[in-house]
Figure 1 (cartoon, helix red, strand yellow):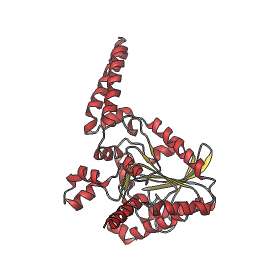
Figure 2 (cartoon, helix red, strand yellow):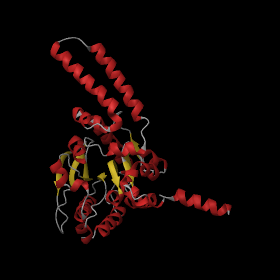
Figure 3 (cartoon, one colour):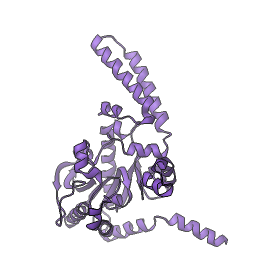
Figure 4 (cartoon, helix red, strand yellow):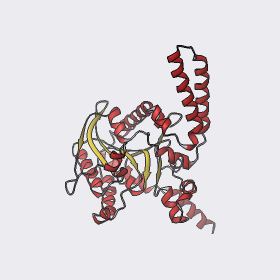
Length: 332
């Protein structure tokens, strides 16, 4: 996986990729020639770590969006395979068809029963096409809600993995009631009596993300983003030119640090230096431990109180703007 990440290096990662390639070449030469180059390797590895820290501690919002979309970033399927045991995928919405852009199923995380719901993007090109690049149709959201109701029936907590550019905007999706189905999911998830934890692991785009994202706890990976619109979509609307996406990313305040500061996100899960795409195992370990910790905190809350707290959580979003407006009115 590390070799694949180097092959898909982003523009601003070029100095890191160059050092990693030199380390790989030197190590291969050392092994084939049986010449001890440990000193040079140690020096290069130290230099590479310093370069990672220098670059990754000063990322701008657009660079974080690029990392969130990295082709080797862990996907929902990686988290399921990594720490969800006895996973049994559940298919179908009971009305139209099974949408592969949404994966649902029962499993266990360290012995705890959970219902998994998540966006599925696919890794290879055929998988991406089959999953519609992680952009669900209405039947995907119906499937998710149907399985969440099943979890509620058997008192099983729900873990939602968010990673989509948005719900599919095609004509066929609109004909089948895309907006209505997403709205029904918001209403349905708000009324669930079981614990719900949502994790933004990559892209969190528009209603397509929140369609499976109404939760008691909202978590974000450090280099993910969560926004009402993609930077490209925002730029196309404001400036009629998608090339202004970096500027839009800055204005949208879509990073994990922004949303944590606004009180929208409950916890930001720190990624390994260099991004989650470079250290899959470590990222999976961190996500698993964070899920279990939050589950422990909210499992024993009374269901009625949980619903009330969840409702208040979302009603409080945007209060900062209301207070600012009120302050201006008071000054006037």
